[in-house]
Length: 436
Image (cartoon, rainbow, N blue to C red):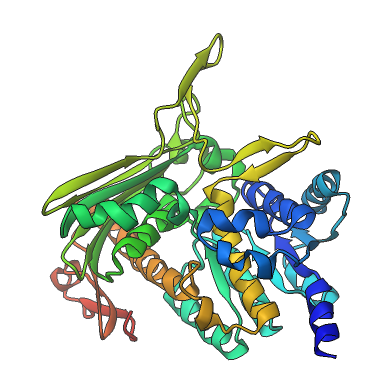
């Protein structure tokens, strides 16, 4: 009887639904789930050090059951592309909150993958958790520390996983830094990290940039990586931003944001982000980081890794062949590999262990970026947005950039000395009362 029950559980597919099919959801998520549906997860596990699970997880089947998007056109396009790749057409849903109808229509859903705009992550995450559905979400998990704690609390109540796609953890260069180089360079002193997106992202691809900013959008890649390296919490930050380029296109959004975070272990890291890089730049994005320690330094350039080409009419170009790449199969199709896939594989593998093998979320918490990990980045994002806006205001008033934030056991406090000059109260304004 037990064998029959086990066979039934294993033969039932892990049902996945994807909400958001834009630049990342419609490409990396959809193509990853297409390979899972066609060939399973076994072939990917060794890439992330989980080859010991191969025999357990190899028999599992996967199904992208549904796709949801804001517009019907986007949903139909994504479903058609998935059908062309796999022969399977997912259900489609569309509207302002399409995840609600989707969750009602698929009551036995295992995973909701959330790739909506930054400010629309929390609603589908909470809706899924309320129904006992595991979640994989794009970064940032959310934009508010209050929302982060609501997500974490509900996930614990429902014994569900909320996994966050932090793919920079899985870059081979970053793995080398974490497991080897950081121990060679001694105690970290200071560093910098930058990720500069093309102008088309903010000016045309995304319609929601006024609800976000370049640091909130891509800064979490780096804040999470620094957390992953050192597991040291932030203790203070300052932030500034500029509005010059996008205003010319009547877009009231920050061109660039710079944030300095000081950590409990004494290191200070500068994060620089923009989304106005000209289209004729040689790479898809400009990105890299460096860390100086007491006994050395590590530099990692993720934009130019030594691969460059040029051709008539195409200019000089670089390519990141490590993020995702197509590997030709004998049948003419292509396998989809890279550290962008590895991140999602780790999230799916952890959920499979909980959903089909009775592991607890705590049993697998070390193998993927958890909601608790994402809480650190969310706290930095939340505080940085407040500090940035105040400093932007004061700078334009000729008062400099005096505002900072402090993280401690008493919560997150915004320190605004300008208010004292104005004779106002709340120079120290606590925006969050629980410890980070």
